[in-house]
Length: 189
Image 1 (cartoon, rainbow, N blue to C red):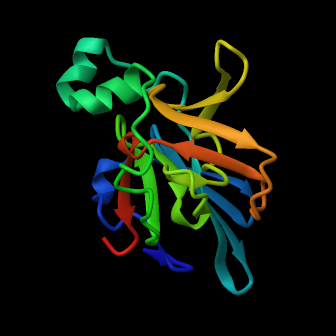
Image 2 (image 1 turned 180 degrees about the vertical axis):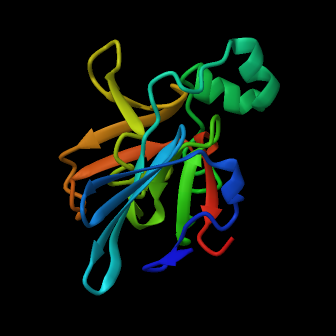
Image 3 (image 1 turned 60 degrees about the vertical axis):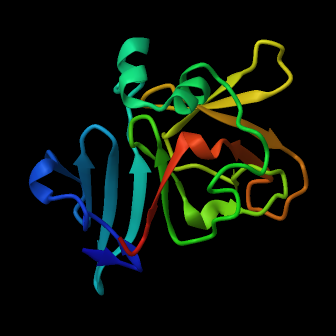
């Protein structure tokens, strides 16, 4: 299904999803794809429009022991996602990638960012001005100087968010994310 240039459900068989539909009003449907995201579609006189993808990960929905994480992550992914490490600036595969698609958590696959929110901050890590609603949690670092961002589903460390730096973005925020914490899926795949 394609809506406004967004390819939805093309690579995942529909039979693998648990569909629940519930009308919010007489012209609005919400499709819940458990456990990770929902698509909200509004019907107008001209047809369906106003599509919105919203991450709906419940906290702890992808919890594993360290042993289980080590079995599915590379040693570097484990160091960054589970032990809150940082990759060296300018070394990540997504820093300079500006292709249309969706960035998901490398640990659990939860969609985190649309490529339309990515911008070139020059910091050496992928930068986004906002995540998908409900996909990212914020926590003050123990020293109180920075705000850590983590995947809402699995708690994997993504990086940090900075506010008020003056970038010409709608939110004036910079989500500085480790490339290794992400997996990119191009829109045309």
